[in-house]
Image (cartoon, rainbow, N blue to C red; front, top):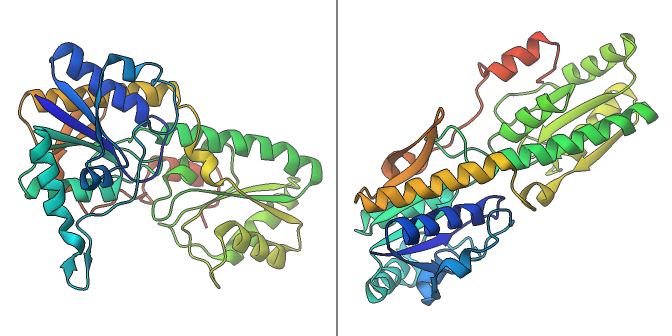
Length: 336
């Protein structure tokens, strides 16, 4: 069999480990030919495809980014009522001309949606969820999430000493447009006093009261962890908006830190390397068994798969009954 593999959407720790897991399993165990598709789905439009062998896969396990490159190309996105440039037809022609028996798509929500459309068009597709936001529906965890949480937690740890020394409020903004998984997990792991998520409405007066009450208890500083997707007024960034509002509400000196793309960069954690390796291997098993149109998923401690048709267009969001939120509230942490 000949399989093509691509990475699409934002970069994320663990992509290269996944490529390695797919390709080494395909080459060594199943005797397949593997081809790397550059720049995501754009590579299928430009016919930018190269063979991958054992030497191509050396040193990938701990390497950040993606050796295949990535893009946010959305070939099925309609413009003015029609699919622009008939991109789906171009991709299908490339796949036929190259004799690719399956396409492995590594990416987040947008990638899963495109992969599902490719499957509908008759292409043999297997996908692997990739996102630091952990918001892909159908899998308990996506690789990249643990790495991002580890980086964010380390940053929160470091802010504690500065906040304590200067007796001020520190607001740290982490990634998460619609899903607050990074803010929740890093905020709890880093000892955040206030954690704000896009899924849970907040009252700025309650936040101010929480900070004042901490002062009354002899705690002269506070750590506020906010997801970038919380609602703000006037188009302000989350951290800036919350810091300004806290200063207005309390009169306390407040500073903000935006962690940004640091959360996406660098080497994956050991957990993400192993998860990526397992997911990559399972994707190749699905191909060998002819089980196409599916996304690899972690369910509990087991790697399984789910139909792509069930995944596309859905988000996995934080709910208020999550055990970290329940336990956090019992401990006195404010969620807004």
